[in-house]
Length: 476
Image (tube, rainbow, N blue to C red; front, top):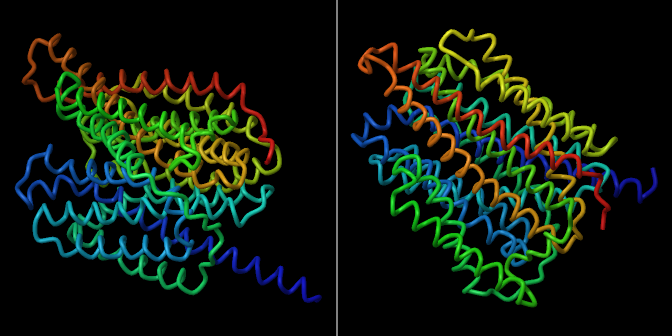
């Protein structure tokens, strides 16, 4: 073998090892994020707090991501890949350790914020690094592997945590995660390479402040809407302040010669369409992830562990499908995946909007599984195709925007779904003769879930219309 051949083989091995480092860290990070959701009921009893208080474990996490992820594009241009990777893992390890030992709710909330700092550094860095180290014709398959991690980890999180809580305690959700974070750190310290270009652009403090208020205000406002109601002054004011700050932030970015977040990425039509497709799909995912467990546990009277098992096949198949759709994308492009993916989602969301308290478990498993297949056909192909159109110098900004708007869309999707469900449930309760009848509670929640899935159906139709305009990116 020639010297060049040996160097290429060595580079391929290093590339794969870099990917493995990210996949291990990303998998266990996203697992611990969703796994805690199944422990909220136990945490209410252990720490003697209300349901509105315990929700801060999720809201605080999303809020931290919403604030820090937009800044990640700037950090990627200031610090090396190794520095950011190691820092993100250290935050994740420290946060996980604090959470495992947390003696009070306040300490556990602090731990979640520290964990979120690690995740906010890791996710954009992972996407940016993949774009840099893999050629365009291999990105679909690689993004598919990342999709396996991103979708599979949250899917098995509730099932595994249900099992852990049943036989151990909520602390073990973090104790089990901790050694995997350490392994990812050691693996990355050995094999992670510096692949990004350090340009050290000027830091504009006002842009950071406006970004923090803007994205943070919107995420907080929508996250609070389900608890406080849309008429609450806190919700209205935080969303209004957030929108105003984002408008000022955008104006400032266009006027700066070296913006903190380069919004010129929106000049590339496939990036914009890909971003909107991911935005819509993530709203559907997050709203479904909160509606289905409520329906299964209240409407069908399943235990938390049983509900987790019902949702497991869809999550597993979604993870398995991601690498497959990635390879199909590399070969045939995005439209043959994104368009039928939205069609599958529309059909399943329509079926889910007609569930009743008599719907069989097998039917729910089937509908959720096919919905997740549709999601896998849209999520990574649309994201990869969009990022492929950007020139290399805009990769950090593109990945930062993609990851930021996922957090925003998740907050919006969850808040709107819960609001529609609650309003429909109240309307249903007003029409029954005996609201105190226990059997009515399950029926009323099911009625609310039906209407909330219609919201998902509407935005999926919008996604389908957009998919007709998607075509293979012209690589810059």
